Length: 294
Image 1 (cartoon, rainbow, N blue to C red):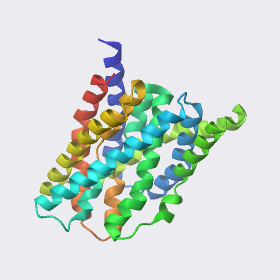
Image 2: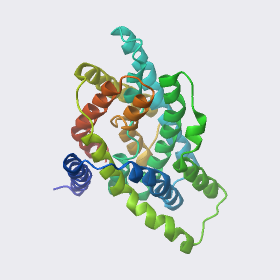
Image 3: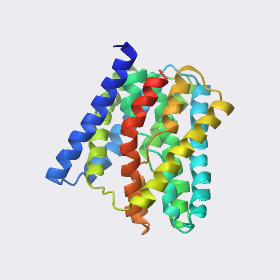
């Protein structure tokens, strides 16, 4: 078997295998992992973001292209989502824009990028994640509530870890290896922890709103294809950057969309169903993407 194909298959098996085990465990034990989620997002993920950006051999232009491509992807999702919701008579169901525009930019792609493209690929993914996270807590909250919450976005430790790493790289400052050992060790825990938390989130999700889920999932991937086309035409990424941006354009919806929708008092069941269906589709789609773009 081709070595590249073996790498793809192995990465997909380990990622979705761990998610599946966590899903079954969560269904049986019914644990409350809210505090674990907070520790992961406040400590482990920021450490992973910082270390991956500091260790990667990528230049500032690639980082800027990754950020621009992420904005294109979100913009395409919002524009196509609004058009489709109006066409089907769901103009007031703006919560469905969340699973269309905002993808799972950390739980699934981080381990896949690390396994297939190494720390350089992961560093680009970290930047896409940071931009997506910022947009969720500003534009996403604006969609759900009618008013943004910039303070919530600015409180995300992963965002500041990304900013710090980019600033240090621009200044050509690298902390001593003894100092880097701490975030590097913590970052190792981030990937398996995110997959376990993702499996736990899926275990609490049910496909109850089938029609909205089908519509939102179709538009999610259609807008992803449109964003990918625009990105390739406008930014013209090459090499590793091209591979990472294609993957990010076609990721499934983020679980956080359902939580934010529930807090806003809108139809969280439809959003949660959309997230689940998009994730099920990604089990087939992501391995194909990784195999084709290598």
